[in-house]
Image (cartoon, rainbow over all chains, first blue to last red; front, side, top):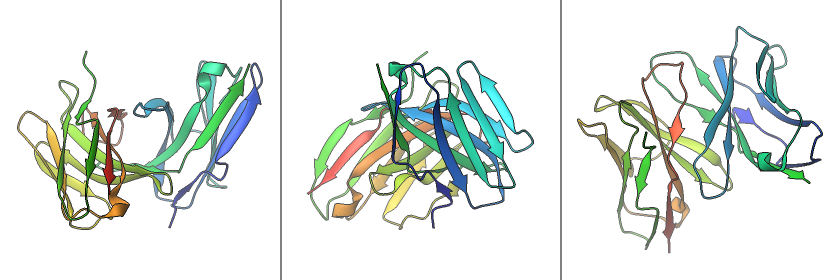
Length: 113
Length: 114
């Protein structure tokens, strides 16, 4: 049972435009959400996170939106740059003393010059 | 500051063999987690260690095991390898085992089972 779903395996956008990556989750116990970016032959790197008590978190060109009622979050990248081309993973966790992330399968973002 | 180091980076084994992967976390990080990445399943949590204790475990068979040493270095072992164990195994470290904090991933160990 996929508790975190990224339904778009790939997304292609033009440089300078907005990239919107989507993620849905089913477990209502999730209370912390993260986005990771992964380049080929490298490990994932943390990008941005959001707690369930918020509905928006912004960091430079990256903004994450959380809609708890819809169990949906999205990552907006504005403006998109060719260097943003990577696989983006959405992840979620349940509060507690243990750190266990549930990841989506990832979305490959390609930003065309 | 050195990142998370995983060894070996690549290895090839045959069915039935066993394999041990090693992970050195970032200095000062006491929590080490292991994840398996496959094209079909994405990133899946294997287990997490904190202060030499396994704190959490994913839904993997008992053939997958791990341990953590007093210097926070961790190893994971897969016994009786199956073709489906071919994957990228990622190790991640964090300062604490708490819910707030980000994981810092290594580059992974790519295992191919023939």
